[in-house]
Length: 355
Image (cartoon, rainbow, N blue to C red; front, side):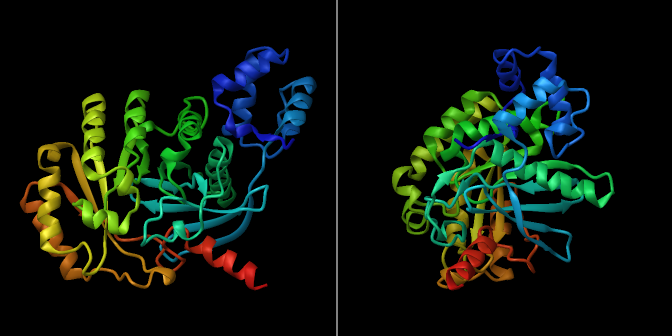
């Protein structure tokens, strides 16, 4: 049986595991410090941890399960990593630079079953969930990349918007959040973490009940069922009415603003009619709503879609604003390095098949 990533354990789980295996509780804090503050690359580098604990950790866990395959660096400072997992599967992780800090977009699944017709992530079906350790390790690898630059920079924000549907890997997602948020480790604030879902309504209820103070984003992309179903098959299982009922429950429990992601597809969902429908849909929730209008990144395999022109995006934006909806336009990072999520992975797999 393959050893699991040590990064998959929360502080509570690590403490319990060490105690169950005959170690003192304080060893957990020592190990945690070496993992997340000193960021060692092998267990033997944990200098104040006794040999018995080191041997135990080496027997049951590994520190590195991700191998860097490709690293693309954009002229805007965005860095896209293609990582190979221990089973040979490939995933993407992206480091983005903003005026408020350094944000990392992480992947939660190998492939995606949601099947959005415009998305590069869903070109390859889901083969498995990532473990919580594999998700945490993406952050650790990016942080070690920053450490190597010698600029004393740290990952300050996380968006769970990479390949896969995060709420379809719910338990590992929650453990990941607990690990990266831990005060004695990476200390990335919950309000600096955003989780995006395509609209798994039943999981939105469950997420609300966790009490986590992370930000929620919903990939909406259409304001009515007919249009949304045509581009997002998940809408058949969770139509807009069910989705919005779950949103109401989340808002009641958390009183936290929700971001609605809306990809602008030319002559598909970018008309004034859709803008007015969206404003009406969010009208009663406008004080806790923010619409993120996203210019589409073209994907070769989805050539039926094109990016809305600037005038259409601006008109859509103004209609929402005029109807009291908070909104903005998100221009992409890393446009020169396979900007669309899943694009780099898809290209690399194609190359491997050709070879």
